[in-house]
Length: 294
Ligand SMILES: C[S@@+](CC[C@H](N)C(=O)[O-])C[C@H]1O[C@@H](n2cnc3c(N)ncnc32)[C@H](O)[C@@H]1O
Image: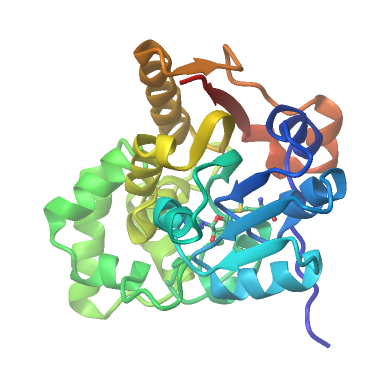
């Protein structure tokens, strides 16, 4: 029996209230995932509406197409950073709304072969796009010490970055580091357990961000938002950790100061308690929405 993967879309009704300003508009779902948000949006949109869905993960994209099963969706196996050129090719001036639900889906996290999970053993992969040559194994086994320190510090906000980088350098000289379990073991050997969070959590985050160029993609998408959203349209971003949220907050602030955009949410919104109770992964979510006024 094949496993039935799930991902519960976060704050879907609230996002739809903010984003779906035109019944038959064009919408960009920059992170289609398993299609949860898109399916919900389409249930509230008119027959002429269109959703252009992007995802770097081809497996997720196929599942999303099956689940959404709606001719109003067009799915692209591309990064959301390519949305401006796709819209351009389709002759669309700009979308009425765009959603970026950052990070990874429960499907990717729960599937041990993808190597994202700290809970289950799996290969050190962590790629969103399985066609990309850069796996987490390449990073831990081939990148120089200074680069390992940089990503642990900047992307993991890991205080023990030198100790951990050094431990990785030593371990890989003996034998290549191939699995998530081995990675956990190495980190634990120099950064002992304190409290509930596993000491390798920040290392996993750093590797995932580096492997997928996540923060660069967010920066790029925020910098070219006016090529994705038409005047009067809105963009919504869901973030899951402070690095992402800080970046989006600062970018939105700069856009608002330019006068061409206005903040729809003055502060980040969080899911209601009832949603967090049903879906623990919603607990760290933060939603920010901006509108293009010029
Ligand atoms: C949190 S999930 C989205 C879940 C989706 N909103 C749903 O309801 O099913 C994030 C998705 O974004 C994808 N992703 C991450 N970075 C991306 C990028 N630069 N371009 C396109 N997709 C990306 C991941 O592969 C993952 O499937």
